[in-house]
Amino acid sequence: MRLSVKGLAAASAIVWGGAILLTGIAHLVWPDYGTAFLDLAASIYPGYETDSGIGGVITGSVYGLFDGAVCGVIFAWIYNLFAGQ
Image (cartoon, rainbow, N blue to C red; front, side, top):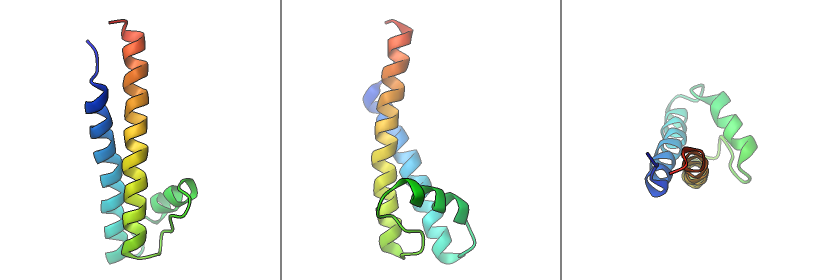
C-alpha cells in the first residue's frame, strides 16, 4: 500500500501549523501556556518571535504549515520507497 504524498503533506501541514496556531493563541490569552514549545519553534524558524503578538502567531503558523508539508512529503516518499510498490 502506498501513501498519498499530497494527502500526507496536507495532513501534516494542517496538524503542525494548527498546533503552532492554537498554542500561540492560547499563549496570548495565558502567557505561561506553551512557552517552552513556542520557544523551541522560535529557535528553529528565523524571524518568528514568541511574544510578538498576533503577527508572530501568524508567522509561526505559516512556518508550521510549510514545515509540516515538507516533512509529510519526505515521510511519504521514504515510506513509498521502502514499501516497494
